[in-house]
Length: 193
View 1 (cartoon, rainbow, N blue to C red):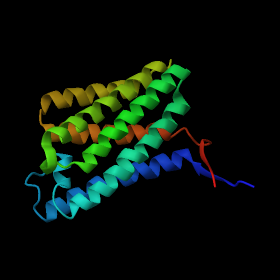
View 2 (cartoon, rainbow, N blue to C red):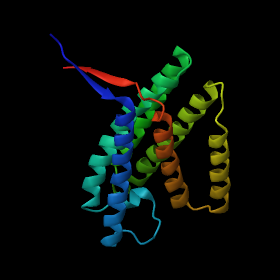
View 3 (cartoon, rainbow, N blue to C red):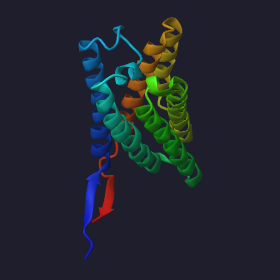
View 4 (cartoon, rainbow, N blue to C red):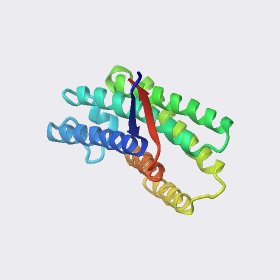
């Protein structure tokens, strides 16, 4: 007889998102304490370059930000998709996003800056497409998100610094994960054991 392990989808997404944020915060804090970064607001990946931050980030970014977000985004796509086509497109984008952030975690700026930046930018852009498709496919547009996105865009135009934009995008990514999972009370991941 096969047993089924039930994991609450909302809880999984929230725990994974929190662990991803903690990875960034821990690496940032260590990088600041050890003077591995010389700016109050460095690029996030600047906090992943030197030891011990590089070890923590490779585990955290690959585990939570890459693979955990893949599962989270697929759960969100399955919950919110209005058609099979939209669901398929969102799942493909989820895989692209996961691969991109996996490479960001595996290849530091010191290893290869061009490859690192290419995957980081593609990861953020793919998530933007994920959100646009998700919100546009729903008939009821969420005004607060449109307003919030507009304000962030205006702020990024006013403060044109790459670190500010990167931290803002990461914050929006995380807030969307929490927001999108907030209604998933009765959704579960079922695993045959």
